[in-house]
Amino acid sequence: MRFLPEPLRSWSGTSSEYPRNASVATLFEEIANAYPNSVALVYGDVELTYKDLNRRANRLAHRLRLSGVDTETMVACCLDRSIEIIVAFLAVLKAGGAYVPVDPAYPRHA
Image (cartoon, rainbow, N blue to C red):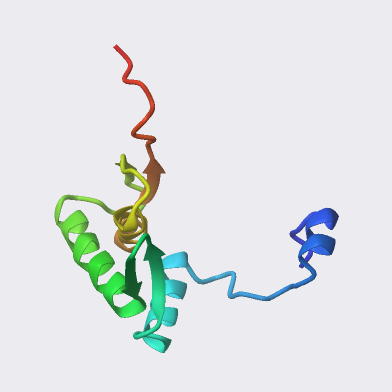
């Protein structure tokens, strides 16, 4: 837990180790495989299981790869808060790209 500043360590009161050599996409895959029918995401009255979230992210990741997204490709995502923003985030990571959030409310530059 050496990576947390002291105030956060004392505030949270918890610690956990995680595999530092695994990517977020890999860790998500492991969780999705271990708990496929558990609820992964709730937005409003919509619930998505890990299996469904993983399936959606894999489908989009495949399309991103076909479009040329590869390691370190920056992918701008301009989405409102929704299930789709989480799907996009995971898909970009699975495709090997770098997720770049763009706030839809940010004014356009003329």
